[in-house]
Length: 257
Image (tube, rainbow, N blue to C red; front, side):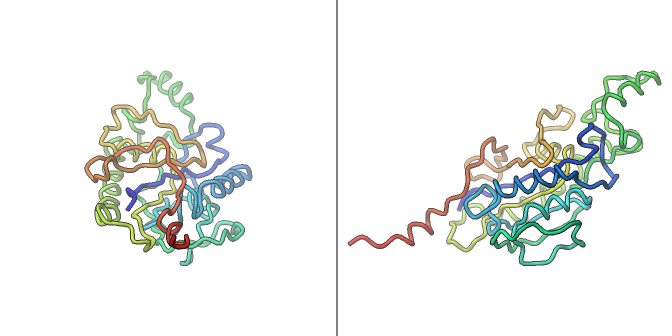
């Protein structure tokens, strides 16, 4: 069996992501261009011969925010079960795919609570701190947000989700041979920029205060996995290959005499 993975999908472009305003609790929609780009991502990366194979997903986690849920809808995985929320827009064209994974909406992967910095750009935050005699060299990974969340609080809820994924979806499939039954332990998460970058940092055991150098564009996809097929060696997958089911292809070949 292939080593299980976690696919991190950041929601598509919004008006606030365009101008760099911190968007936590504020529930704003994707821009028309954001929707188009997410659809393009789905066409390029989701499919039976693509990076994200719907029938191989074991579970799906989605943020409770509308922008993340709409992004998930536009990826168009071919779900058998209905969405656990009222659809936020018209469905994309049917891709002819099949996905049996259950969708779970969880607060553990909602965006950072920015508190009094909600809707404010980083430049404006630093200028405001300078004007009020606070250290202008503000860094969210070190300082957190006043009236919002601290790096320690983010670490706590991200670690809780990481532990759940490893215990429920990854550990049970490690070491098992793929018998073509569809499951692989792959997990899909659709959420937000800061929380997904924090998730990746904690996945490989790094403190948020170490500074997070990862980037994830609006509508972008990242991949996490393990080295040496070992649950004890979590890793960031810098380049993920598209899926080719060698076993099934070999079975379809006529037997040589």
